[in-house]
Amino acid sequence: VEVFEETESLIDSVLDGYNVCVFAYGQTGSGKTWTMTGGGGADNAGLTPRSMTTLFTRIGEMSRTEDVQVSSYFLELYNDGLVDLYFKLDNPRGEAPKLDIKLDANRQVFIKNAVVKPVGTEDELAQLFQNGNAMRHVGATKMNAASSRSHSIFAIMVEV
Image (tube, rainbow, N blue to C red):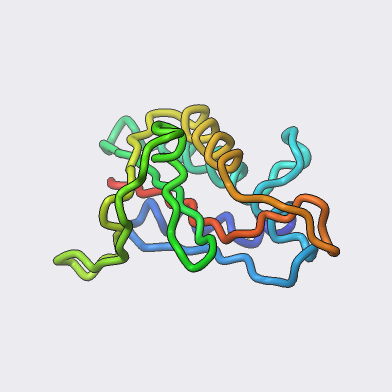
């Protein structure tokens, strides 16, 4: 809860048109996944679920005056390669196209060939987050019985 309270104003920055990135860093077992994802239920929700709730609440408050579009992509960095988790959801046996990190004409970073899903509701985004997380590589380590074994990039794009 404290981490979210410290970062909640970043949602306003997003809706004001700024790029925002929250980066969790630390050794295995230090609580990165718990901080970002949580442990289920509203009282134990992590930064990402709380941010989704707040984002869609604020969008609802704006909807009378602004047209807001939300979309998302979800990647993992595993064994020095990018894996498109939404592609894996849609094509469990398919071979994903090569992903490349690029800059667009406005000098914004984007991932060429990544599956970008339009999102209309908080529940829809939360379901994508949950399903994408289920596709990540996991394995036991000495520090953590269910270590993610990868790094995730969950992107939410907001156009006002």
